[in-house]
Each structure stands twice: as C-alpha cells, then as structure tokens.
Amino acid sequence: MGAAVCNWCKRLEMPIIVFAYLALIPLLSVNMASEIIIFSIYALSYNLLYGFMGRLSVGPMLFLGAGVYGAAMCCVYLTANPIACIAAGIVCGALLGMLLGPVTVRAAGAAFALVNMAFNQVGFFMIQTGLAGWTGGSDGKSLYFDPIGPLDFNKPNHVFGLALVCLLAAFFLMRRLTESPFGIIIKTIKENERRGNFLGYNIYGTKLLVYVITAAVSAFAGALYAIMFGYVTPSFISPARNIEVIFATLIGGRGNIYGSLLGGAIFILISSYLPNIIQRWELFFGLILLASVFWFSKGIPGIMDLFGPKKQDVNASAKGGLR
Amino acid sequence: MLLEVEHLDVFYGKAQAVHSAAIGVKPGEMAFLVGRNGAGKTTIMRAISGFTRAGADSRIHFNGVDIANHRPEEIARSGLRYVFQDKRVITKLTVRENIHLAAYPFHVSPKAAVAKICDIYPRIEKFLNIKAGGLSGGQRQLLLIGRALIGNPKLLLIDEPTEGLAAGIIEDVFKVLSQLKGDVSMLIVEQNLDLVRRLADRIYAMKEGRIMMELDNSADSRSGSNLEQFL
Image (cartoon, rainbow over all chains, first blue to last red; front, side, top):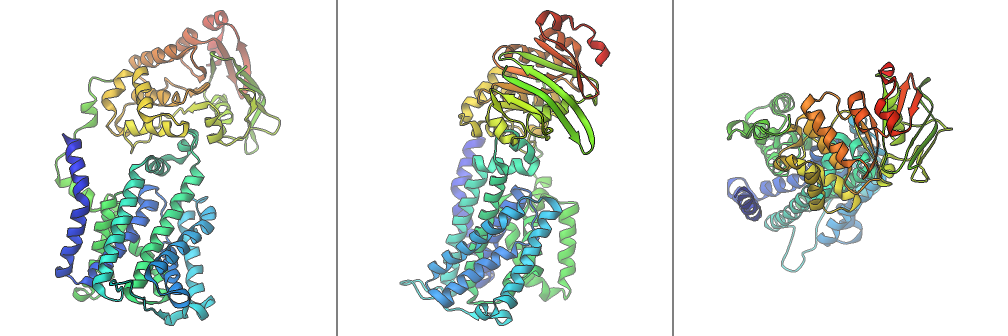
C-alpha cells in the first residue's frame, strides 16, 4: 500500500513542481520565479556534494562562475546561440572540475573546504584582473542572445520556460543518481569511505565523479544566469557569496533533493524581501544559519517531522529478533 | 596454502607492532588468531587486507598472488574480505541497501545477494527495510558476515566476531560460522576460547607482536593446549 502511494507521489511530483513554480509568477514576478528556479538548480548540485557525499566546499561559486563566464565568453566571442552558450558553460564547469578534482577530492573536512575556497579566490582574481582583457574585469560584459525560432531568451517569460525545463532535467538527473546504486555508494562515502574501499569500490574515482557532476550542474545554473541577466560581472564568481548555497542546503535539508528546491526558494525570498523590512537583514540570516547548524540539522523537513506522525520505533518492530 | 604470510613486520611510526609474523590458511580451513589486547592480532588483519602498510620485507601471498601493500579495494576484489571488529554498518542506509552495496562491485544481482543473506540468517528478512543503524550488535555482526560472503570470496578475515555480544547471540554467530566451515576459508581473531576450540582447524597464539605458538591439526586445536596463557 505504502509503495503504491509512493509510486503515485513520484508520478505526480513533476506536475506539482511545475505548478508550484508557475504559481510563483503572479505572487512574485516572472524574473523572481526564474531566479528561484536557477538558484535551485545550483542548490541541487551543491546538495549532491555536501548533502549526499558529506563534503562541505566553501568555494562552489567557482563552478557557478565558470558556467556564467563560459556562456558569456561563448556569446561574446563565438556564437550568441543560447543552447551553444549553455553547452559551453557546462563544458567549462566540467573541465574545471576535472582539472581541480584530482587535487581537491584527496582532501576531506576542513582541508577540502579550504582548498576549494582557495581555488575560488584564484578564479575570482583571474576573472577580475588576470583575464580582464577578455572578461571585462570589474565592469563585466553585456550579453545579447540570438532567438531560436520563436524562442527569444531575451524575454523574461521565455527565460522562465527555459529555466523550468532545465530544473526538471536537473531534478530528474539528481533523483536518478541519488536513488541508483551510485547514490548508495555516495551515501556510504559520507558515512565511512574506508568501508567502501573494503567492499571493493574505487572510492577516489567515485568522489572525483561526484565533484565533476557538481561542477557541471553548478555551471549549468551559471549559464542560465548569464542568459537570464544578460550581463556578467565578477559578482557571479565572488567568494563572498559562497555562503548562499550552503545556507539554502542547510535550510532545505542536507541529502534531500526536495529540500534543495525549498531551500533555494527560501534563500532568494529572504535575500530579496527581507532587506526591505530589516535594514541589517544579514543578522537575521546569520541567526537562521546558527539555528540550522545547532538545532535543526535536517532543515525545514526535519522541523516538519517534529510535528508529523511519530515514526515507528525500529527496535520495537524488531522485537522478537536478535538483541 | 590459500593465504601465506611470511616475515610480516608492521610499524606504527618507530614502534614495531608486529615482528616477523608467519601465518598460513589452507583452502576450506578455519584458522584462529588468539592473544591479549594489544598483541597485534588486528594489526595483522589490517596489514593483510591492505589497511595498514606492511614492512618492506613482508611477504603476503593470497591465492598465489603477492598482495602486500596493494590497495584495499583491489584486495577485496581478489576474493579476500575483511569483517571489522567494530561492527559498523552504513547506518543511514537500510539493511537491504547495505546488502546491495556489497553486491554491485562483484556483479551479483542485488536480489540474489539478499536471498543469500536471508538463507544464512533468515531472521534478517523482517529487518530489510529498516535503517541499519537500528540493528542490534548481533544483528549487525551477522549482516556484516553475510555481506562479506557476497560474490563468493575465497577467504574471510573476521575480527572478534563475538566481542561485546550477549551469550545467546554468540551461539547464533557460532551457528553461522560452523555452517560456513569448509565452504569458505576463514582467519578469525577471537578471544572466546570455547568458540575457538569448537571450530578451529588451526590456531595461532600471539604475544607482544609475535606468533608464539601454532597448533596445526584439529586435535591439537580442539584441546587448545595452554592457550589460556596467551589471554
């Protein structure tokens, strides 16, 4: 019975997601809805690395920035075809992940977090100063994308449609990954990677693959940002913004793909509307983060569990078996 | 010999934990390593399974192949499995997923893997869909032993399978081990001499990093002459 209900839920989840984002348009604006969707793709990618595999990176903006600048440079110097620009952004992110991954995934804990932050700082410097002749440095670049038939991604409604399709694709990919045998290995790495070795898995290769997928999907979100905003500046790769996706992941719940959608939406709403109410809104933001870390480590889904029906006691159900 | 260890030295920094140990396990044999805490039993198991580096002159041959200082996943894939002492399962995964986890690297169908473990330990069937973190120590131990058998390994290294378990569960572990005897070779670290005497084909007694005594036939093993002095 439970499994049948679960199957129905899975069949309905895509229409529910589409409906929820469409409902945001009259409540907010089409641009805000698009921004929430794109940020949620970014949060989904980060959740794979941090939530599922347990690797806290303090430099995920590097890969978002790689996607933004990959798409932008393609638009400025090669072709303004938006699909080609998105592909260029994803390739840039994936290549960067392949380049840095062999170094970063050997580290764990604080070392992993800091190595990623260091690479993010280097990337920020390169965009702002080292490659300023190409990237436009602090001034950035304006972008204009060619229409593809009736689709003109310079129009907000069309960007919303594109972002929504991309979100569904990213969500589907993440769900398949996390529910597959590969997902089980990733969760094993989070809990005890040594045991994975003894079960015969190439744990280093798995970690590297997750890192590259995270980089590529973050870059995918970055490329969509380039199309949505129609300009690029170094703020898209700024290390100061790394906390945003970490916040979204913590609020939404680590290791929960639905949580990425929820956390992404909450972060964009807080950061967009709270400054209108509270001048020093970052204080409120910090307090939420503290509460998430110390009391609500499972994020909003964990809080909802507190008020939901109590789960069956495992040991009670196991009564009669071995002690 | 299926497993042949000679001149095994293991160092932790400058301290030598194992001194020129020699161990052998024949196909189908159940060998035991006994000794006090700190004697070096677990260190030997870890060196054989690739978790700890063996000294340069150490020789570890498994199934005719030198596996000294190979990577743990290579050793596992070659047919040698290690069941750790701490009975750690992947707590956030269900029991079923824990079993599946062991099936994928050896290209065993997950269903067949579950069926195999249920065959060895039928009571696990009703826990398949709960998180493995909810299992008791005995259930975890039997799950880990069953999981190590997936993919038909040639040799199991089992570290203190009865440690911390209640008497009734020790009997269950004993039943499972005796059921497996002859089908798969085993090298077991154990301090429960009753269990050792009932099951052993060969016993190695350790003290202060050295193999002090080897009882290499079933009769000697069962009598377990003077084994108490090593515990």
